Amino acid sequence: MVFLSRIYTKSGDAGETGLGDGTRVPKDHARVAAYGEVDELNAVLGLVAANVPTCPDAAVLRSIQNDLFDVGADLCVPPFEGEEPGKSLRVTAAQAERIEKAIDRLNEKLEPLRSFILPGGTPAAAYLHLARTVCRRAERAVVTLMRTETVNPQALIYLNRLSDYLFVLARVANDDGRGDVLWVPGGNRGEA
Image 1 (tube, helix red, strand yellow):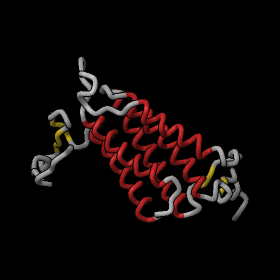
Image 2 (cartoon, helix red, strand yellow):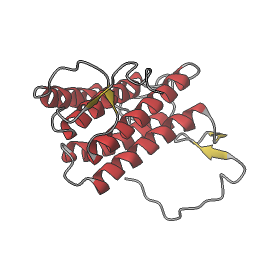
Image 3 (spheres, helix red, strand yellow):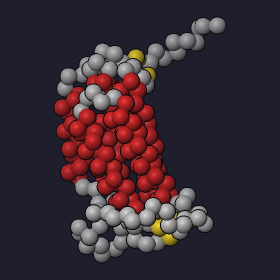
């Protein structure tokens, strides 16, 4: 359990922050950017919960918020050679598998897609599409970090599954896809 007795420490006033292993890095370090994007995603899911209390799968979304803290904690502590299993909090394959099962459950009742979907529709769907795009940005930040540093691959897999889940859930929030607004390629090119 985390215990915070004081919120400000002044240790970041010079533009550095501490990783979970105590290493000091610049606040714009790729690792900090990656877990910062995950934190932003979690905040967007908080907006969904606060603004759309009747959002489909609300309990699963709340559990995902908890998982996102696990993802952030995983990214915050760089893996090291010889790390003892269970010593650091790491995202597991089971967490992504739980999302896959939720996707399969939700997708069963949706009509197959025949075009790309414009973000929007109901307020819940709009917030979920926003969360999906923030999730994709977090995923890209983790990929950038992986180019130069070791990262638990399960963190990336989790974010990839989560963006798919948020897309499917947005369709569910749009009356099981019946309220989706479809993209019409070149639909406005002839208008003056």
